[in-house]
Image (cartoon, rainbow, N blue to C red):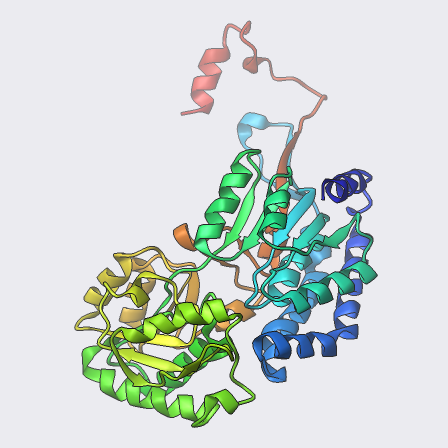
Length: 453
């Protein structure tokens, strides 16, 4: 482990990763490798998470292609030093900001989108001129092995490498003095990563989770709200960090919303979702067992069937849930959707704000005043008005959390920024020298007072 790390350190210090032509070529090489292994990626996602080809391509592969395309087109402009204004106090000088790569980066990826969430950060690391070690999740071992195969064929290990293994391997990596750590995963593990980084004051990007609400007011287009909530919630069998974790609906329209959500669950996945080619599986039996205990809370108004050995839980709607139930105290990360009600939008806002800041928030409302009120009064990582999930798929929007839901952001330009340090440089003239800055000038204080009024 340490041998690989030191090898990357030495390679980065050669400066080979910095030229624009090198970075662009490596991004093209990465895209070509994904193209080569596209079928194997799709098949592996099917085996481990039962993802359909449509879901595998749209939510894992396609978004990475778009990230690479977006990065290649704009990178030549982003890497240029940026000249910025200089105040009168610095007359004769010029000010610049230089983006520079951090160095050797650790990317720790999760199991729920095991391809996309390993490769998307890598796009940013390459674009910014870095080296990187990727640690995929041990819960998706087939994808981890495939990533190692693909990356080792495409890049020398002193530049980009994949390290497989469990918790002990992650701990060994965290003991090393990386220049930057990019972690995607749960809040508890994020705290461990941040504590490890603190030993060396290593900068971190943390993409975590939390309980992301879908708020539905009485003015909402209920049919579309139900359709888009069901899609966003049960995508990847609910194992999405930005999935709607619960619905907070105006009490006057709750019954109608529930009926419409039932309708769309059946429309998307059929009467027997376990037989649907479009419905995913839970990643492990242990994770399935954890989710099943939530089914004992509230009242099941749709779904509720499961098979632990097959790692399958039916899309489930839970009514009569309270904030004290376990299902509302933990991030669900599965195909179970609790439903709570509110009487006024002020009450709904207060409910959300009583808990940790969510990674995502989804508001369904036709009332622009309500839309603005929610945006202004609730702090959340990102989200949508009258939709779910879709904000993550555009490279023009930075993606990240706030507070317990994360630190830092990526996607598009934000990915380049996440893996870059912005170095400030002032270039001073030698053609003249203003004596008022020096203490032996008897008029220095008078001039300084005038300048800094």
